[in-house]
Length: 324
Image (cartoon, rainbow, N blue to C red; front, side):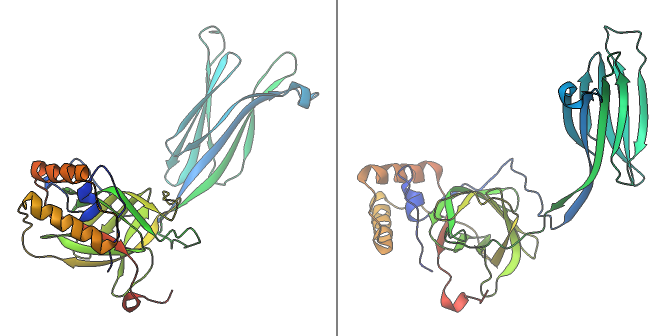
């Protein structure tokens, strides 16, 4: 697979081999991918006052809000405060309304009542009436909110959203092993390889021998292999305009190959390293880095003792392509 890389003037190594990383534990904890549809109760709240003899002229809005299970909303009217809380009590959607007088009006009694909204019917309550005929009205409208976390197919368009942009993207294996950052872009099929761990190829569309093992959401790829290993990549963008793909999660097809052995990397001499970098750039047809960029790249190699993480992005070869 032909590999193409996004140029980065701050890091020659990322532009050439993407050979980076430090084998170390990090504080990043990855959550498992959820493939579920969630439904939960939600209450919409409106508080206003109005004189029914002159509704348009007298209408005053006192606030609104929404409360899910365990949520609370507080709204103020005149010298009172209205507190609304919701709970799931043995499968019933129970809402509690509490009316609390202000400290400036201690003669007003507090009050509270509960309503069972399991029947999903909207209700309206008159909480107070002023001498001028204005009535404080609390409208409560129940609903059920649906959150669909099932991964969906990312539709490709003229913006080529299947095109990966991995620019300074952090790579973590098995939830805790930070192996470095990668910087490559240019096609729909990408790979990350680390000796002693795995070579992982992935795309937003099916390809030969690939399985649906990953998701893309909020610029993060989460992949879980069939034997319980994991790969997380942060800072992922897509398309010709390099955007964070909205929505999601999106399906990611994966070809996972475990790599035996142990990761080792001996620092080459500067002359040998420069020769390899220039040869790689010539192979890709890219403009070679400047002398200053090469100096910075080699100093980083010596200082951080990088291990051999490699990566690349390219087309899906005809032999690997599967008709959509």
